[in-house]
Image (cartoon, rainbow, N blue to C red; front, side):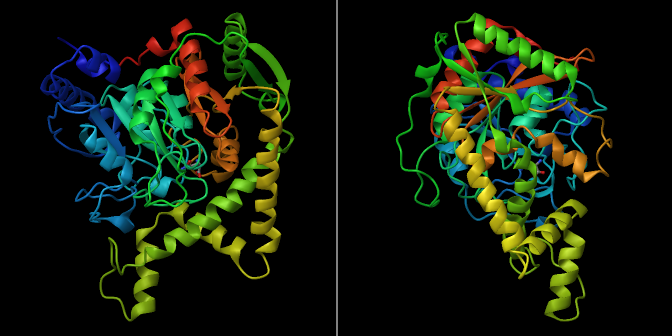
Amino acid sequence: MENLHTFTAHKLLEDKIDPAKISASVSERIKAVESKIRAFAKVNPPPVWNKGKLGGIPVLIKDNICVKGEETTCASRILAGFRPPYDATVVRKLKEAGAAFIGKANMDEFAFGSSCETSCYGPTRNPWNLDRIPGGSSGGSAAAVAADETILAIGSDTGGSIRQPAALCGVVGLKPTYGRVSRYGLIAFASSLDQIGPITKDVEDAALLLGVIAGYDEMDSTSVDMPVPDYKKSLVKDIKNLRVGVPKEYFVKGMDPEVESSVRAAVSVLKGLGAKLVDISLPHTEYAVATYYIVGPAEASSNLARFDGVQYGLRTKDAKGIINMYTRTRSEGFGSEAKRRILLGTYCLSTGYYDAYYLKAQKVRTKIREDFEKAFGSCDIIVTPTAPTPAFKIGEKANDPLSMYLSDIFTIPANLAGIPAISIPCGLSKDGLPIGLQMMAKPFDEEVIFRAAFTFEQSTDHHTKRPKL
Ligand code: GLN
């Protein structure tokens, strides 16, 4: 059989395809296109298994997730040569399910970014247009799925890093509810926001992969002890009377007209399928980016304090004393966006500024969460664009952090509120660039997201469009 690399995991499993053939097809594909895309931090020859729920299915892991014995760098020089002595819980679960590790995915350094340009390995390119960014920070994971260099991928999402690249690469990306998936072994960016989740070719694969990685873990005190539903049961094509909230704050003047028209068309499709549209308001949305850029960097500055040349990765040569060693290691090891985040975060947490910034941001965060609680009184899911524009050009925003930060304007609120959110393809721009539709739900209601996303997907043909490489 040909072109097995273009198949979904559920199709390969249903058809009981020989894992050796899948591996061979994916390896061939990587050889053919990886030099153009550069989605991988490292390519592994896939081991061939055939047991377990994901027996033999290739999976690509973002480079901020620990795989025992495999170099794990967060695409940063400061972690060069770091080989974790243990597996992240998601990796352990994937291994137990028989998934085949085909490598580590490129990303923005420490997951700071929306374009995959801040990696020490150089940028990843968007398979739909090689002059464009794939989104970030899980840009390598999303680009590899879009380019058929892997069947499944794992990303992480702190402010949009699964959903935004999934939208820009025309694939499916899910940020689960905070606490649904263990963060043990995920190198922390902002511990109160980070979640690991699937990036896949369709909704069914996202449900399959979440089912494998979700669940309580005693190694992560923020993981929640709730049974993991059988998400396959949510894959029904029926949204009759589902209440779909459309928040006015996500359709603003000046937004990209093609994004707006594709998302509005998707909302009409949902209505045509029997959903009830509800106008809702999330009044604190306008404060979300500002809040995130206090909470996120504050937590990051604290989490990144451990990279000091003593225990992990890089240590500068010929340092004069311990302080000089710390300073030089960090100056040489971190890239400029990481330094910017550390400076912002340290400032917000320092004496005299803590109340004005960090504490205030926490209060606004509560307001944002309350907006969602209130909105979910009158709707079951909330539908919005995932990103304000399709993929932009490599270099276009690299020197303009503020405009880069605004790429996550629609994805950040779900992280601040801790709620689950998916991005699925809903169209192409006239330049042939993918546009994503975001669906959000109440905490731990991934099931309604899967049902709505599956119904939309199976009633349209957006997910069947592939980039020509
Ligand atoms: N782009 C956002 C940032 O730069 C979100 C990143 C993420 O979710 N890891 O912080």
